[in-house]
Image 1: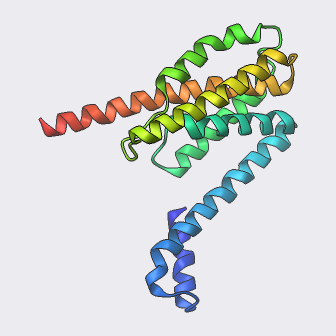
Image 2: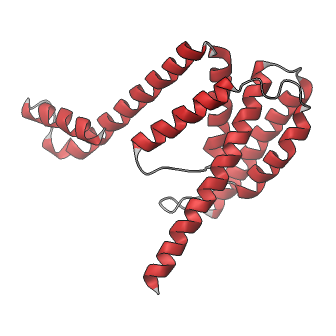
Length: 193
């Protein structure tokens, strides 16, 4: 994406459509815009191929709400993130009804504990301040309470399954993110000693 964005910026600068001092911001904005368009296109394709618009929509809303306040695994390259995200989305969508004949709340108790104890999660590139950690913890708890209430008081439905999958994927992301952070901390420690 960076290469495409840079080529677009070169064309814009060549045509004198923008001030040269704004190249960095313009390049970043174009790159982010292209990534959003590609991501939305992939989500649209998953919806078309699986015919699961309600499940995919509910899953993405639930996962995004939770992920914003918990953190989790972040990959360094957009292409890896895109492949992993869409692979996970496909696997989750094809297994949407896995919980159909299981008691919902019992299944998610270990997942809720993982989310509670592993989040909010900082990354090596972006450390959370104590104030941010407290705010994110409170908001994470509100989202979790809302999800537990929906799961407990709703009958088995595709939305309940989507929330369960969002909780599971978030917990896995937190564990993988923690492992990645430990790996980076170990590498930093080894470099300094």
